[in-house]
Image (cartoon, rainbow, N blue to C red; front, side, top):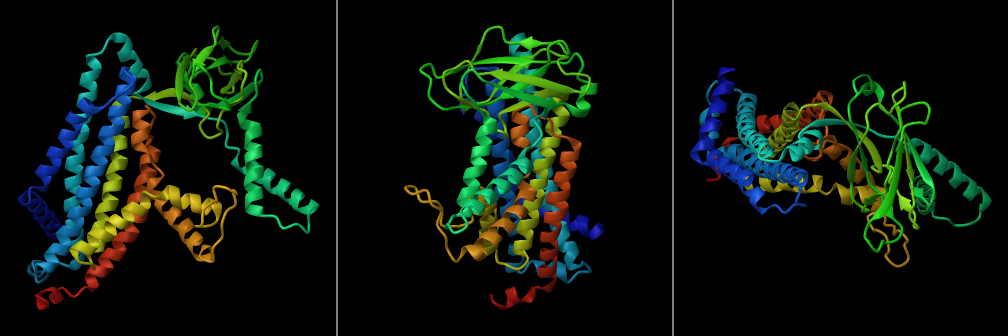
Length: 462
């Protein structure tokens, strides 16, 4: 432990010697203070606070991520290239202690910087909230500065896949000699099935049965919120559409209705409060939507409707969100040090940034995997091209997506800006997937490469 702490302290001294800690801290604080002056919002305290949270945390994550990669690559690669590592390697310090000491130094630097910037954001939000009218403060406490759980309809993905497979077999059985593109047909059948579940024609209703689960035991007399989003088949002259809602079951539960139709815009999320105690004894909330418009409306299966309810306070939820961001910083530290363990500083930095760019391009990879080809879809014919490379590239893309999603399967910034709850189990899962699994595998590679590297070669080439 003494050797590890000594290397950690040397890493801190290097960060202060090169003014890295001070520069990054000033940039983070400038982002926290300056962004509110540049942000354009919808004029409401709720909208401003949500955008402020999303922008400041995204900027903090980006600045910390880039500085982490630069320092992680530079602190080890520069020491090797400038022959400083030999002064440490000849002492009774193992290679793994040198590597791990630098890792602890950078991780602790990130912890300090993230704590400073996170505390600044939290204080700024609380201070701004106290300057608002009482009505606006209530909205913030109920919808943004809070930790809210959510409940949705059960996933229909497996049922849709099974029904799609059955219908595809029926179509192929009716045309045994025809040359049909099964990939295109499967996609078409899937879209037809989704349309049957998502589309609400004029003057028709769409029901939801939402099981609140264990939350039913502590949601008595507590307000609930509906978060809805829909798309419209045609444009409206006013830009909005009417919506009628009923929550509850007549003669079985309390009933809540919209006496006057709501005017809601399509392609955006809307939140509105409903009365408490509308679910039955089994914790099931029955929701009914009536479409009084002259055009069909579509509620996506993924995010068309969900029920939001209070689970806890904002402070602890904010800390858990920062914890997940800290897990990302640990992974970037491990990646940069592992690259510098066997590469020069410029190459290590380039390779680390390339991995980061690829991890941010999951949309392109996912689209190629979904279509089964890298050729894309022809805009005129709608046909999907094929390539011999697909036999190799698509499995590689699929494997890369699985690995990348281990780290990207968390969205603390979106959750905090929407007032969503980040549970302890989610934080623990993030630590296990990002730090222990991904970071552990990358660290093993870095430690092995550093232990096998001939450090004297750098001096011999000077």
